[in-house]
Image (cartoon, rainbow, N blue to C red):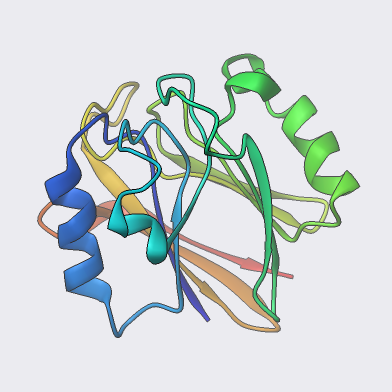
Length: 170
């Protein structure tokens, strides 16, 4: 299975639509980790699984969500309520409680992933306002098989980001 993960576009609807167009028949699931700043009735939510970020106002988005893909149990949250700026401890507890194999989050605008205790923790970074050591607007694609989880980060031009490919054995 292939999952596209994006976060923190902060009102940039065009890039969210572009990702749908670019990967429409290439990925099985589209995930948005919050701070889209798009209306909850926007047509993009017919395809994307999304959660509410700290800049998404209104009550029509869930703050936490679990999606069962048949191969993975994906736990999603924006991260601000899980204090991800201070580490992944709270997020890890939440993911374990949900029996997740993948935990997706955003909020920090810093891309990165790690595999701990059978769970892939992934932040796609920000597609519009990156922060941290790697200041590249980015999104991620996860390739999931029964044996491995592979992550590749891409820039806004849909080119692979150098040295940002990871593979983990389950």
